[in-house]
Amino acid sequence: MMKKNSNQILVINSLRGLAALAVCLYHFVFTTTGFIYNETILEIFHFGQRGVQLFFIISGIVIPLSMLKSEYKIKLMGKYLLKRFIRIEPPYLVAVAIGILYLYARNFVPSAAAIDMTPSLKDILLHIGYLVPFVEDAKWINPVFWTLSIEFQYYIFLALLFPLALSKKNILNWIFNLIVVILPFFMDSMNFYIHWSAYFGLGIFYALYISGKYNKWNFMITMLLCSIVVYIEQGIIDLFIAFATLGIIHYFPKFKTKAGLFLGKISYSLYLLHSIIGSAFINFMSHRVSSPEGKFIIILLGTIISIVSAYFFWKLIEKPSQLRAHKIQIKEVNKT
Image (cartoon, rainbow, N blue to C red; front, side, top):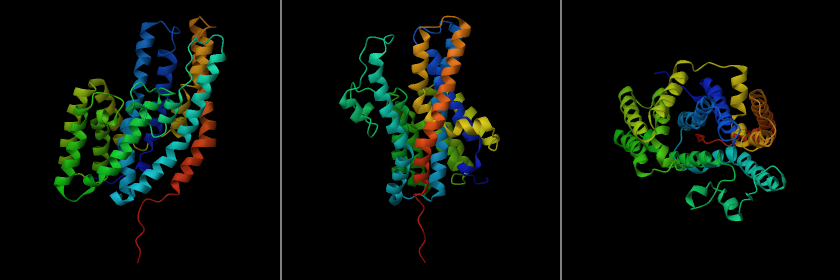
């Protein structure tokens, strides 16, 4: 098996963009109350929420490949987590601040529902460290943030246990494998990484295989076990999405388009902003448009506004965070 790293899998950029766009359209079409009534359209766009699963598979591949490239060891955990923190936290915290302002400002919009959605101080503070799902009755300022909590839990999980998968001792590899596979049976809530462990595992074990760390038999057995668990816990549709994503990545790794590269580049920013910027615009206009054509134009404009906003957010907030994170070298320097 030829060794690969995430930089060689160009199609991942397009898949990230597709995932972010799918989630956007799901929120714009399916969750805008009283806007779209056509059951067929609602059913089609309802699948957009599964862009989240696409993100999980991509993370399952990309993060282990990055750790393999840096020759990760448990003593490098501090640098690894710091790098991830600097990469994702500044855009997230700015998005939290924007969300607070939006929820406060909507109290002064005459057409908004007469419900004060201004977050409590407790809820705001729980966003630091993604602690909302750990506290009963706590609420996310932006509903999409629940997946960021899962991703952060995933980073910690790999930081602690991935060295087992990298060990030359087969028994330690299999301890890691079994932990990944059986964790979902201990948690029903979708708000925690444990529930999604086997789903991420499909990406993790694929990454270990294409990098040459796992042989064919280890790969086949772990993928089979993960598939069984995913089928039981998440269902056949999620399993199909996982294997379709893996198939595209495996057989078309060099595929790229300008649109895909662009959307992939701003995908994190788009994911963070769309349910505030785009949804706010669509919700505001939904009370003023009734024709099918008008509704289509409103959703299209909401999508364009979200993409444009995400681009400037990426340029001003996310890109600087990427550059700062890139300066942190995890790999140890051999001293001679």
